[in-house]
Image 1: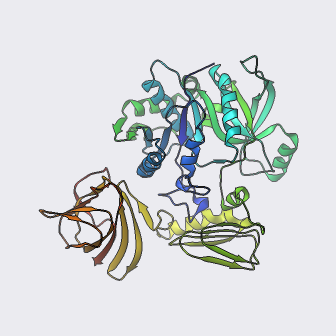
Image 2 (image 1 turned 60 degrees about the vertical axis):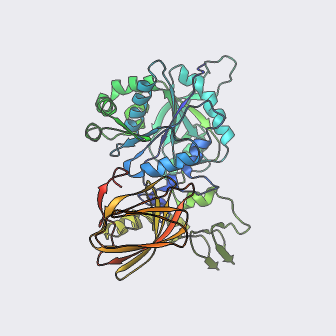
Image 3 (image 1 turned 90 degrees about the horizontal axis):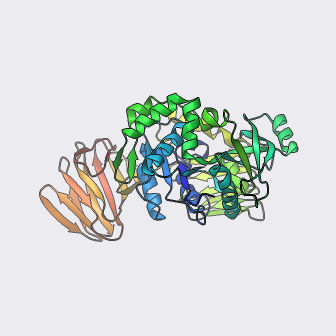
Length: 481
């Protein structure tokens, strides 16, 4: 039995467009709080409590790095443990860089990698932990363990795992709990999915795995040396930056894009499946969220400020306003500060088409929320009209905006709460609640929060051009900000 801690590898890429308008390109579903008080990323990490795990490695896109860092900091799991992908190259290269990085950082150890997606939910977390613990001896023995979800219906949106003969545990005292993998099956049509459900030896492919880092590298070298070589160079040239490890952009861009299933799992002889019946969902659509959520007596799922009259089987999500329904059924209604989605439940998969239309029209609602998250905090557009824009700005303790100026707008700031240290030209000024300052067009300025609590202020900008690219930065506090 391996007593070394598991190394969780949490893949936090992806855009989650099927949960638009709540999920956006710059703030996708893995960062959303859909149930309880934790985001999906945070919940993925916290359900590992009780397992013998080291600090997780989180793999994410460059553009999400500060969101990931903040969410890890909020649950005390930030430990220089974020791998930044400069471009997306699917799961096989992502796991490869994590495996290579772990072997480089633990030269005397060969960690067991527990590969997880950041955007799944699991209702029965103790069953999940039991399955992981039961799978450890198999992974220690050199097997590639995949966790197959016991299907609850004839689903056409998932790939399947066809289980074969039983596998005896390397621990003689353990009963048989796993099966050899006969094959990985593509997403079936309804007829095939119904057949799989009846046969009871087909499982949904969850995309969760457990195996030795060295075994993954060994099989990748055998079947996809091109991926391995590119990832080796990318890790060799990687650089530490604050809480991040920046993977070399040129070598990683040259890496082929491939899933771990196609690159390794479908080709090896040592794949085994451990069945998992723990209330799993990939929350792939609003209908999936309705399926897994607690419902009222009328079958409705409500989040936020919602009033319902004579309405049944609806999902209503209200972010910032009262939403009322009368005499409607089987609808999905999602309200955010800048968008409203109304869809029949059976058509929610077409949300992706709406997102494509928004993108092709040159609109920004596919990419970002009204609230925009930054390394120093966030800003939220409250109102915009001809030649003016009003924002609420939040600056985290110890953080601040870089020295900058604008060519086309002036700004007026009012401190709502907290303490602001403003540098305007050669002057420094400490400001507290209800104090204000004017930033003329063309003036150089910076803003810091020297206090111990968040700084909140209202910014009123006026001028001929008010977009975010009218910023000339003179001294950077953060890369790209």
